[in-house]
Image 1 (tube, each protein chain N blue to C red):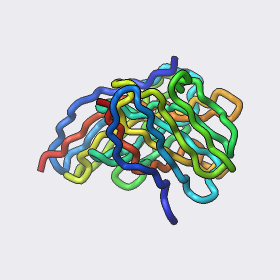
Image 2 (image 1 turned 60 degrees about the horizontal axis):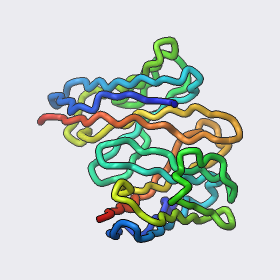
Image 3 (image 1 turned 90 degrees about the horizontal axis):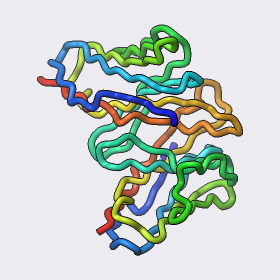
Length: 117
Length: 114
């Protein structure tokens, strides 16, 4: 079974520039999450999608971050304009909603490492 | 704000000994609890989850939950050098509407000394 795919793996940009990250979840997984992991910290939830609808975006800095999940499959996270403090690994995760015992069991992609100079 | 607290370490344990990792959480409404392992430069992977008070064992790993004390722990028996990693405690506090994203602690860096 193919895992969660993310691209690009690495991105270096200057502050005020824009960047986009792409995620393709595990086939059949209805729920998709974007997490931000700053060096030395645990992952922080940015946004949760259920199919193509947003369930939770309470921690998404909406003045600069946006995300969409068209057709309920793959998703894009965009940052515009980027700030120095956005330097982090952006992790995409998916889960199979409804399976007994699987609530909260997230399958993570390898992540996209962003460096803002 | 929901918080999950962990000692960042590093926690150094001799090979073959028991490693004990601890975690506390702030939200009394939390329902499920997870331990993820993260190797340097890699993404987190699930080790164990626990929903009910008490102990849950899986091979060399035992998760312990005490909801009254808002405390969850992970024991690793017969520690191996390959267990050296950062261990993330995560809590699911479903707030309704289908929102069930995990809240993670900062992680404990575990080093198993050969």
